[in-house]
Amino acid sequence: MEFSVKSGSPEKQRSACVVVGVYEPRRLSGVAEQLDKVSGGYLSNLLRRGDLEGKSGQMLLLHNVPNVFSERVLLVGCGKERELDERQYKQIIEKTIHTLNETGSMEAVCFLSELHVKGRDTYWKVRQAVEAAQSGLYTFNQLKTRKEEPRRPLRKLVFNVPTRRELPLSEKAIAHGLAVAKGMSICRDVANMPPNICTPRYLAERSKELASNYDNMSFTAVTEQEMAELGMNAYLAVGRGSENESVLSLIHYQGAAKEHAPIVLVGKGLTFDAGGISIKPAANMDEMKYDMGGAAAVLGTMQAIAELQLPINVIGAIAGCENMPDGRAYRPGDVLTTMSGQTVEVLNTDAEGRLVLCDTLTYVERFEPEAVVDIATLTGACIIALGHHASGLMSSHNPLAHELLSASEQSGDRAWRLPLWDEYQEALDSPFADMANLGGRDAGTITAACFLSRFTKKYHWAHLDIAGTAWRSGAKKGATGRPVALLTQFIINRTASGEQD
Image 1 (cartoon, rainbow, N blue to C red):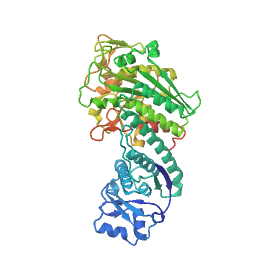
Image 2: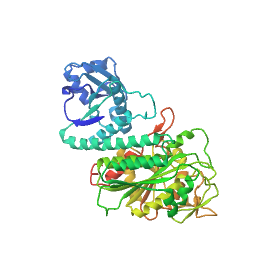
Image 3: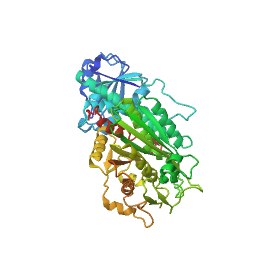
């Protein structure tokens, strides 16, 4: 869909539809009042009759409003003016897009970007509207033989801003929003793909394809043979029970001079996680295809960064692997020597993500990174702690943690910091190795991060547990595209183009 911005009066718009807000109880927004005035009180008369209360998400489509050039006027309920917050604003935008698609309006001018959202400016409102609109239009139908498409889908959406001075910033908001939305779409496509298609090799192919689209991107892969030569025995152990070979895919984005240290994003890429010998229950095991949500998020973020051509160096490390039970599979009780030289006693083969990540985190030391952020659907305990609203953030470096938290607030892709105190490290004690791969049920998200922290001493590091945010279960199950928005904002803030906070 095409997006643009302009500054003008609602009654003068020649469009298939003009979108304006109505507050509860039955109170026109400032822009709607302008339409009401030129129409001789047409809108206010409808409200007095009770046609629209103004509750959040209510819609009323009007045709041939007197003295208005547009064919239609869509009144959108925005709830109580003083209570309009970020979440409600995004829900209103999504509902509006859905309604416009059903009306047959192929273009529209939207004045909802002029609504007052507490603590947010025009840049934020326009960017969030773009992302919400694109997210609401997303479908995954690549594998369906019958694809249902809207009869006359919305193709063009123009956001109106109060003054012409806000046009440049709003245009930047559209560029950022479109890049994030494209990255989220790729993330969702890859994470939704079934495991018989989305294998570690598939992740490598998608990474290579992305890199080939941009002159300042390149791709390399680390094969199982190379992993063996490097001593990445923990990574290799996890994939041993699968017929699909493990592949560590590396996407190099060079937006700055070579001497500038890169940011490294490491994504857990378990394309299917049966749990190995410690096999998972059968119920909902189909959803374990999304255990590569971290890898999908890195792929989507690299797409967004490349689309914006940000002046920074970033490496995306996609740790592709599959965890299956087999005669060759690793076992509870095994002791593995990691690439770092540290040894790990395996207590549960379903705590496999950290074993793949620990060797990957050691591998990326060679890039002498400015910072490393790993992203993983790592622990069910994170869902118990934070539900499905916030990703868990843990870090050994306070400034990096604060950067990520700031990016989460700016992007609306929320994260919440959990402690990483030394006291939790004791849970990983093992009588037979340097550490165990499991710390027990208590504080499971934190002890998993404690495990990873032992492999990150040579750089600034943070860990995002996205087990509760990368995937939605139930009737509308599927990938959410998170935390692409958070990670992209983090990178934007790191660059010269990050003056917009």
